[in-house]
Length: 189
Image (cartoon, rainbow, N blue to C red; front, side, top):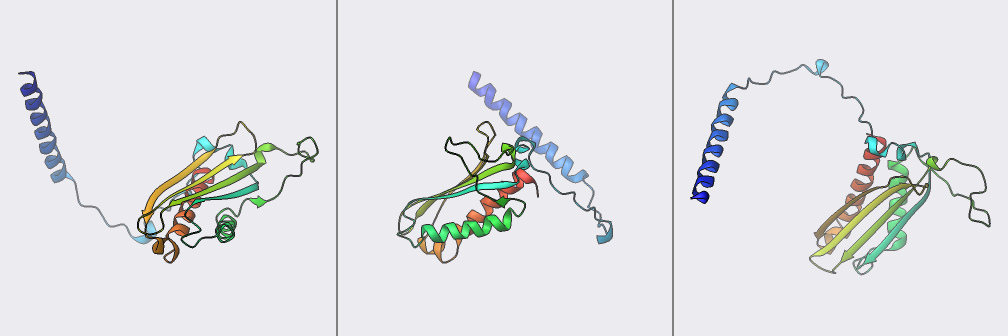
């Protein structure tokens, strides 16, 4: 008895939603055309407020690229991927200057600096498989020098043919998309 009443309730409720959707669909007015000159200009998107401390970064002290799995067997090299990521970081993050931190013998920075001004970028690329399917996991992490600062990690898991990853640049395009979405989340767009 209890199951039958719950089923009846679900049927009635879904019927009400369906009729409500039909009524609202009929009431909506057609969209008016707006001349191009009157189209409002979108304001620039600000970064996610959760990462406002990362947005204060002025320098990148490290861009680390890690490769794991079958990448070398399908045609990628550490030097090639590192060079590609360095070029993309320079293009996508023009507001960040690449600098090294000079440390003294005790492991402290030699010159005074604000830790909030310094950030790092870690890129991890992992693949498994030599033919179809080649599974891949790409991860980009942006963090600050300060041990207490928040980090932002974006990642993607996918699969493709080895030929598509190399010849059609699927791996490169996906890495670029991750770097751009990380930048947008922190610094805005």
